[in-house]
Image (cartoon, rainbow, N blue to C red; front, top):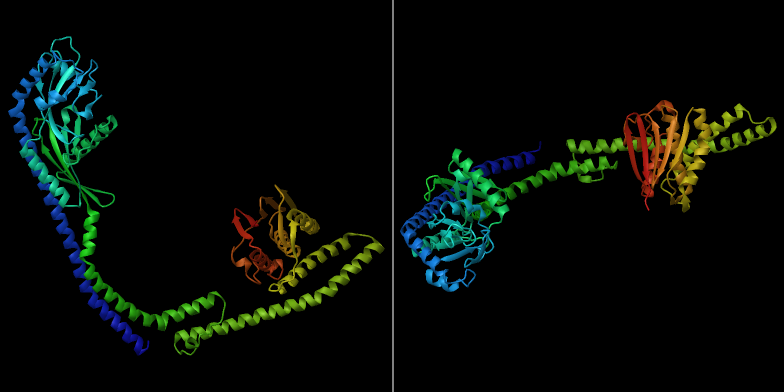
Length: 570
C-alpha cells in the first residue's frame, strides 16, 4: 500500500470517528422529538376524555331536571293531536314546544317528523319496549344521534293512549344548552388547532342488550346509519370493548401512519353501560414535522458524507476504477489499452499486463485454428469433388451397392462440415441473398438429405407440422441453421427418436440426452463430447445467424430430453 493511499484511508477513519458522535446526537434528537409528540398525543387524549366526561355529566344533570317537564309536555302534545290530524305540518307545533316530534304509522314507521333524518325510519325493533308501558308516557335516558351529532332523550307513548292504538308519538328533547355548547366548542377548537388529530369519537356499550353505538359529537354523519353500518359498528365496538377489558387504555397502529387510542370508562346513563373514548392521530404530519425539524442536522450529516465521498473518490480513482476497467475488458475479451493502468508497477498493473498477455495467447490460438480451418477448407474442396465424381462413375459402371451408399453418407457428412467451415470463415462478410422462403419446404429437403445418415446411425427423424410460415432470410444461412441442429441431434441423441415440431412461428428440434452447459455450447470451438468429433463451430454459426435475423433461442434441458426452440419474428 502506497503512502498516499494510507493517508487517504487515515483521513476517512478520522472522518468516521468525528461523524459517529454527531450521528448519535442526531439520532437522540430524533427520538426526543418523537417522545414529545407521543406525550402531546397522550395529553390530548386525556383532555378529550375529561371534557367528554364533563359533557356527558352535564347532559345527565339536565336529563334529571327535565324529565317531569318533558313528560308533561308530551301529555299536552297528545291533547293537541285530539284536535289536529297526525299528518299536519309539525313546524308550528315544534316552534312552541322546542322539541322534535315523531309520529309513526301502524307499522311503527316514522311518517311525519320535524327531524328530517328519521323520516321513514322503522321503530319495529322497539315494539316490545313500547308495549311494556302502554297507557303511560316514559322519558328515555340520553342517546347520541349520529346524523346530527346531538344527544337526545325521547318521551314516547301510543297515540292515543288506549290499548288498541298502534301509532306511536315521540318527542325528542335536544341537549343544546349553553354549557354543553361551550364544552363542544372547546373540543372543536382543539380538533381544529391540532391538525394531526384525525378524529374524536365515542362508543356507548350496553353489554346486556349487546348494543354498541358509535357517536361523533364534533363531526355529524349527516344521515342515519344503514342497517349494515349499524351491524358493522356494533361488531367493531364490542371487539374494542373486549380488548379494553384486557388492556386499558389501548393503542392500535393502523396503516398510513394512523394511531388510534382508546380508553374504557363506566357509563353514567345506566349502571350496566360503558363508554369508550377514541381519538385518531395522523402521525404522517408528525413525521413530516420531525423531518423538517432535523433538516439542519441533516445538512451537517450531508457535509460529513460529502467529505467522505470526496476521499472515497480518490480511492476509487486509484483502485476501484482501474479494477472495473480491467473487469470490463476481461468480460469483453478485449485488451487493456489504458496507459495509466499499464504503467503502474503495483498489483493492478501486473494484473492488466497479465490479462493482455493471456489475450494475445488466446488470439494466437484462435488465429491458428482459423488458419487451420482455411487450410482444411482449401484441401477438402478438390478431394470432395473428386470422390463424388468417381463414386458417381462407379455407380454407373458397377451399379449402386452398400459400399457406394456408405461413401455417399460420408460425403454428405463431409459436405455439411465443409459448408460450415466456409460459412464460419465468412461470418463477418455479407453476400448471401435474402428472399422470402417457405420454412417447411427447406426443412423437408434437409430432413431428406439427412435421412440416410440418420438411418445409418439407427435414428428416425419425425417431422410434426402444425402450420406453415414464411421467413425472409438467406437460403444458405437457413440451411446452415437447420443442418447443424439435425446433425447435432443425430450425433448426440441417446435413443432413436428425433422430433422436429413446427407450431406458429416456433420450430423445436428435440432429442434425448443432456447438456452439460446451456450457455458454453455456443462458444467457438467448444465441444461437450470430444469423442463425437466435429470442429465445435456448429452452434457458434447458429448463434450468429439467430443474432443476425433476430431469432430467439430457447433451450430446455431436463428429464433426459434436450429441446432447441427457435422463435422467428414477423
